[in-house]
Amino acid sequence: MPIIRKEYTAFWSVAMRRILHRYEAAVLKALENETRLDLEGLLKKTGMGRDEALWSLEGLAKDMLVRFEKQREKSAELTEEGKRYAQAGLPEERLIKRLHERPIDVSGLIGEEGIGLQWAKKKNYIGISKGKAELTEEGRRSYGKRTEEGVAIGELAASADAYGRLAERHGLISELERRGLLSITEKRRIINIGITERGRQELRLQEAGRDHANEAHASQQRLIEAVDKATIAGRTWEGRSFKEYSVDVNVEQKDIAMRHPLRGIINEIRSAYIGMGFAEINGPVVEPSFWVFDSLFMPQDHPARDIQDTFYLNEPRKIRIGERAEVQRVRKAQTESWRSGWSEEIAEEAVLRTQTTNVTVRYVKGILREILKANGRYELPLKFFTVGRVFRNENIDYKHLADFYQTDGMVIGRGLTLANLFDILISLYKSLGMEVRFRPSYFPFVEPGLEVYAKIPKGDEWIEMGGAGLIRREITGLPRKSITVLAWGLGIERMLLLRKSGIGSIAELYNNSIGWIRNQEVL
Image (cartoon, rainbow, N blue to C red; front, side, top):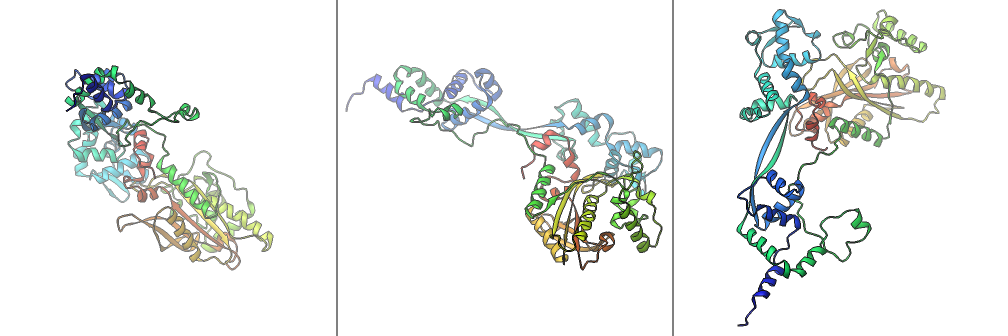
């Protein structure tokens, strides 16, 4: 048996062992005289960045040179809304104080009081009778006391450590998060980092074999550890190898720029329309009632025009209507069809638009005049849409807000029927990954009219998305044999209720927490 000299054995061990990256060597050296460290302690001792340390630990653990444990930790932070409620009290708590004095008309509860109404009703603090809210027996007992959620956000505002105590009551934490008062983040913490005996041997070999490791060292120098602009431009990668890395390594989470989910779906809707050959139009948010109601063949005594359903402005209180010929035509259509007087003064009342149809109806009236002047030589069909905010004095719940987005569309053509309308809406929703169905319904400005429903994935429930139909001749002023106008108005926020399983209420879309946005999935 041949005799192998000792110095050759040392060289062979060094040459054949694992080549350590300089970050890995630094980690082993830092752990040499430590029983156990957590990641923060290792970073402090080595002066390395978090990503470099995590990468090194994963590689060393894979070769059993170090060991560590991963611990999941959750932390919570109050949103801006939660901080405000921690100081001022939850909306339902404030509402109980008001109702303790006397019952209040429900129609007068808007904004945060409207939110308070929703939660107070859910918790059986109030009852509603003949349009008035009053305290129940449970509500009277709760007067002057903070609710369970109110106590919790107060504790969280005072100390972040309160989350550990509250986390045991999982239902409470979930409720606060669902209401957008709490932002919860989950991190994996690395603890109990230690060097193994095999790691110590590797470190000793690394240090003892430096004089014999010229070949190994040269090999390591040839490895490319990071690719940057200089490496590519200078072609210094030629003839060299790349350092192996694992895509499974857990690195520090980076906060990247993200588009808000609501803005994302609005962009998708725009793309879907444009892909179907539609052009986008826009119009004002503040309008005279004429363009929001009267021009849509809605009588002036219609319930939707009441102050309980519509936001009227004090300044300006009136907006003059410039199109005199259109005013006279609408006056004639209203008085003849509804058999009632028509007031231009009422039509001039300034309102926040309750639907985006004010944009499309004004546009279609102008286009129809041009079509008539062209005497049949106008190229049809014409397809256009609008997307914008609308305002309604709604009671707030999981699918209703007082301020939300809507999209309206219209198609002007010859010989168009409901079949064409169905085809357009089915194609639009299909491009957004949703299934729809239709139900006959009544709207003042279309005949026939229908409601559009979309299906909730993994369930049998259908949510109403809006209305549609064929625009009445009283609005167009034209017999349908010559020109037909298809129209629809659809809610946008409700689409996200169907698309995103983590959203339980459209109010969550107006959460001002950056943490909430960062934790949203990319659609």
